[in-house]
Image: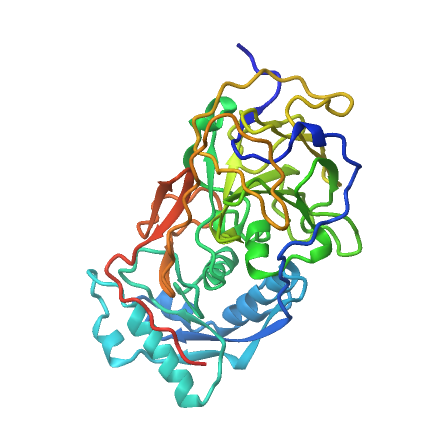
Length: 450
């Protein structure tokens, strides 16, 4: 049987049938959205002179390349971060910014050792060198001959230190610094047949540097919300039916209107809807369209950092949800329709199942029941307005606890599909793909005093 439109079953309670027919572009309901204060971080890049080949020795001596990559006025970590955060986070040079340092005795003794990664010795070398010079810093990038290290970049999650091989790319740099912000690798779930009961963890989202999207894409809406980098005027807290015209997430600041819908499904589950289109930040987005994320909530606090992308498209493309897509929760009377999506805007409607849709609805087939665990409905002061569900859904498990500081590595390929990633394990818990971090025998970095 051929599907005429994409249909995805999702299971939270949200909209009662009696509430259908709300006004267009409802005013935002302000939830606990927190916007970060502008912050400037002093960045030090330490290039350790431990190259094992002439090529690596030359790369580790190329301070101009490192200065342009990390602190340059264009195509750098500094310029990229300023654009993505709208000036809420800026990197400036710690002292001279880029430093050459000899390896300490422990790192030098490990030269040629193919059995061990000496990232900890490299970190100590870099920090001792800066301390000896009296340089104060907030963020540290350690560039060295990584030898036996089986990664293309490493970052504390969260933390202040990143590690790179002698010639890192901008994609690798913004990815590892993203780990410092507290972001794990961003994942997605593919749904064969467009039914969520068949959804399976399917690698990375492709929608963020943290999801193998490279530096040609900004951080996703859950990542911006985690860090407080989304303006309150661009956020809509959805607890009732309505229709919204979304601007692209990284549209010029002069454009008004919502950019992210946060749909309160229940006390333990929310959905984020965003529009991505090619622009000054999203230079690599070749298919403008809507993206949808699932976010676990624990104790009233959304766990944005562990959100995962829902991918209902038949094509398997994880980077957009086409116009005409209908996301339906038959059990709990929730429908999300993507009415239109272009590079300029998207029209998204939230309504109750059984309610009369707005004119010219997309044709769809009646979805089959979903076996995916769902969140129980509940009342809250800000409102998770929901009909009584049919049956008793299981609660969505809260995310696993994250260590205060841990290491997360990245394979050599950070733009395109990541393959390997020995330090990363996907674990399905209560319907959520959670990222478990293990250190592959490497020492855990200590939290450094400021």
